[in-house]
Length: 88
Image (cartoon, rainbow, N blue to C red; front, side):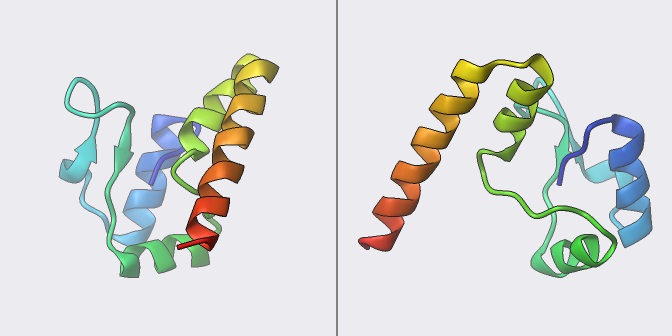
């Protein structure tokens, strides 16, 4: 689970009962986030979190930066991954 801001992330963690001690952040993680269980994922979605895929965090940063080239690359990779998954 990740968010636009640390305050937003911590508020959602508190709302769904994820302990703050489980916060993942650099240098041990690539970005600030929580790894959550499927049950907590369902609670987060019920609390208005938006479901995304593994490309979501990179896509979010690219949107914030207005990096259209990066967004196009992400979309191409996402489409390829979906096609590969459909052929499995």
